[in-house]
Image (cartoon, rainbow, N blue to C red):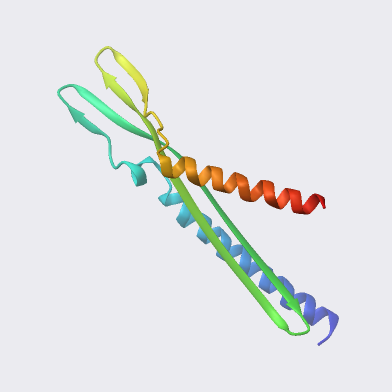
Length: 126
């Protein structure tokens, strides 16, 4: 394969990966919102409740070529957490946060993760 053919193949692979990532970002981003966590706003007795969520999303990908062949990959994810709601009445609107509580499992998990990180750092220093 000539250098020009190799460059053309590499450019085509990069274009394909770029198009795949753009499509994935569009789909993941379109699904990431407060509606995914709570659903639609609700109105009852003159009070409208609008859900509010913290939403994070991302995509990633890769590609490659070499003497053994070529490869590519991609992926994405979304995380959404309810953080509160906006209460709308005839007198105005107010944000009402949802208190976050950490159960024993969450505290234990965080302590275990911290212990693993500290142990890895100690090994790295040696």
